[in-house]
Image (tube, rainbow, N blue to C red):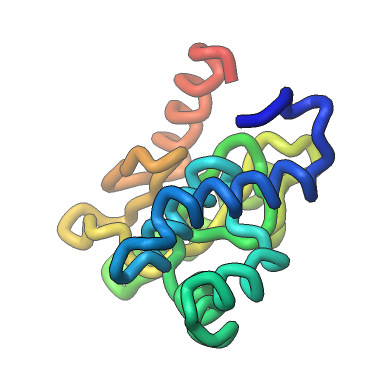
Length: 166
């Protein structure tokens, strides 16, 4: 990326990422998802302010871009914590203790809602299906899935994360 991240404002970094994503993927058929993935991978989120620019560049309505952005749980529209914890809330996980697991995770990490906790380390996101229904309840930490999760197993996952330096 042009310059260093520290010397650039957030808006400048976002604008540069949008330009790069459109330059790399904007010419492809069905470019919206690759562009959104590019932004998510580059920034950790897709800025809401980019929606009109993406719509114009890809010849889509703002509603179409916003609809795709908000439909998939992979995409965030705001910066989150350094670590992303997704807790499944689909039927199988709920039936096997997923709601209690979500409450434990939120309390343990100090993330009562979908925003990052006060220390900025974690964001807790309820999601609807991680594809581990046969091994419920499930959660994912930074994209790594964990099945048959309990509060005690979650504590071990946090301990492993701390051992690796974060």
